[in-house]
Amino acid sequence: MPFLRLVILSSILLSGSAVAQRWIPYSNTLDGFRLMAPGEFEIEEIDFETEYGIVVPARIYSHENDVGRFSVTVVDYRDSQRLHDERIRELDGVYIGIYGQVDVRGSVAYAAKKIRDRASTIEYDAYHYINRVDGHQLQTTNPDQTRTFAAIYLRESRLYVIDATVSPDTVPPGMFQQSLEFIDEDGELIRYQNFRDVYKVSGVVER
Image: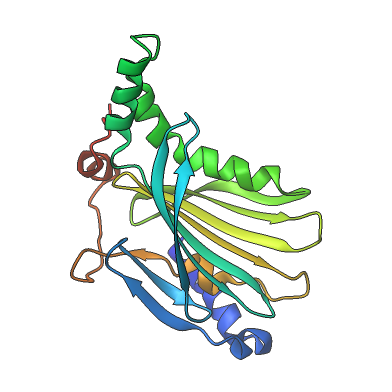
């Protein structure tokens, strides 16, 4: 996997079209990530409705140019259980508490489904991980013939959706999709020793 990632990045760096793209390093300690960005991000705070119908905060970091649209959406599920508990009280027991965990654990699959739903064809659709953080990658073609290169990860009850949607004649923007790393509040790279550690920190029970 590291070798494949190196080959992808090397081929992109050597491409004339990619060199014309002005990639810059971007770090964000508030939401705990860094990557190579195609330019300065605009930041929008939104309300995000989860698969199970609660509303949680999210931020969209986006950049548009003549190549396409690049975005990082960070959805904060850390208050999910409290919101689901409130719903249980409102519905007087009709609703069950495990949905608070299921909503978070299923968030990668839910985000992937939304990307598939807007596509006309799917070229790649498989599990992926970064430093033992579980995720998923997709490459799709949309009805307008633009292509989407997406990567989705769940870390410490925050969902990261990396989405580059570009014109069909553009070199695949692997620099954006493949350069994501997770960082702490001091900007230092986070490396988990095993997959279970991610769930221990997030508060989602792993069995």
